[in-house]
Length: 498
Image (tube, rainbow, N blue to C red):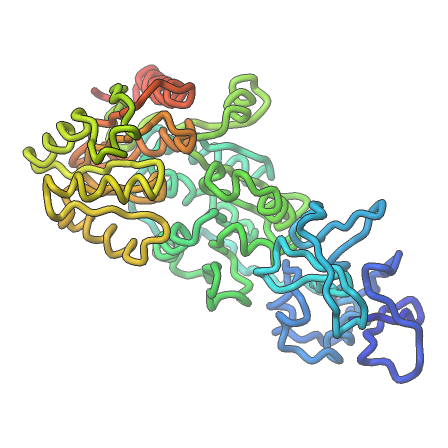
């Protein structure tokens, strides 16, 4: 699209009735924001679609003439999709500055070789002539002035202390890291904070890197906040245009939001891809209002954040114990020799075979983590000779969900897996082992999460976690030390009984 500038207003070329010089929006130096006409009768549907968002024209079903009318009456703004600063492009939707993720294409809308961003193209193509459209008119009122929480559960002492810190951070528009061990029940810790935000008329976003976590959290939060609108956003979601009080979303969907939320809660802040993708971090930051609270949740903060917490540079609250008051299972290190060399000869380390046999003999389910898919495919037939129902699963497995369900139903005695099951799944009574714990894919964070699969249930609060290795790594040692440290803190605070 190209724009003319008429009486200090942008006018799309499709709406011109006389010859005027037109420009791609990225080349217009100053874009004026029109004064809001308080007597203008705006389209409520458009308000609902655009409030707190930054959308493309293709995302809207409203005619261009009506969109332009709202712009001229100060109810929405056109922003540059791509800006050029010091001859370098910046995508204003995803924050991409890497020139390798920009390319040119022959654009039918502006008639030029148009620059576009490849980094966020999955959200619809944004180019140098693409305007981002945001709402600037009257805000939709959230008419909530009383508690919305409908939950009869109770919090442990550790959970309650963290919950009070969350409420305080939300009320004071501050940032807080909740460092909670795996299985601590961190979702329940959020309930009172979300309720405090909703009661104050705030919009709340709970974001997570993974779609399956969104699908798991949505029914849980709808059940405890049954009287408010809850939007669940992920690729293909039907809630895309809902302007809800509580939004549960993948971090990717936040590319569409702009200064929308008073409170943002980011679950699994250490998880891939958020932890390594700067554009997702940009999207989260851009989705917040200038005055807002930010709650980070993780069982495994990175080394930098751990240091900042210990040095008093980052405000944090810990939940060092699980609700059932048992300590975290501590990893056991077991040397297994050069297992990859043996695998080339179709041999498994005897220690691994013995470990699996012991679980089969005692009818104890277990997970065995393998660093690479090709290694897992070689190991499966060797281990399956011990039991025909042993299975393997990985991210590209078309039967992944069915196998996880079968494991939950105790139809699979041993499940081989990549790091795809390091988090987000709970099996009530299992032992866990890692083969090749020295592999670089098993970071400190991954190993702590893997260890966190053990002993999660109050009915089976103990279990064994073993790291089989061909040489200890710093990541293994740091993971074990982090677990020991949490257990020590829990004992000092009187949060464990055993």
